Image 1 (cartoon, rainbow, N blue to C red):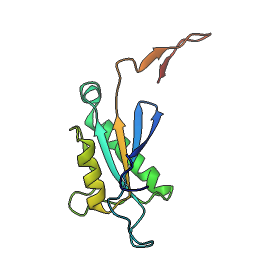
Image 2 (spheres, rainbow, N blue to C red):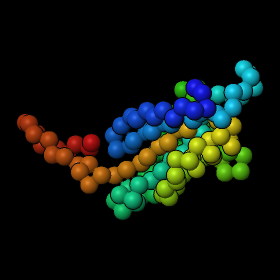
Image 3 (cartoon, helix red, strand yellow):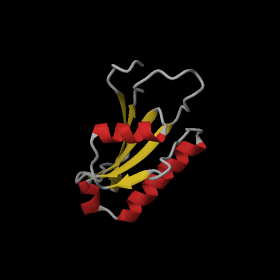
Image 4 (spheres, helix red, strand yellow):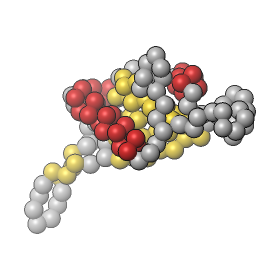
Length: 133
């Protein structure tokens, strides 16, 4: 990817978690082997999750997702000063990409934990039960 291309985005919806990964473009071309290929991990808790769920659920989701990524050999690069960020504050895309670049990562992995109001549906059939969506 050249320095002039826009970041690419991949969106994956799992349960009530949205995983958004931006692929950050470097400003200069580094010689092969000098830049570590890895992802900077950032977890965001939406206002809906803040009002409808607990901080423990967010922390557990963010931790389990990070552990799963690491166990599947995803190279997570933490910022030496901040580590990985888990917050309910919005960051601009430019800020996120700067954090990624400053940490020395080549990708940004952005996890959004949400609890929509319509997350519980009633199932129909021989037995009725609540289904978690």
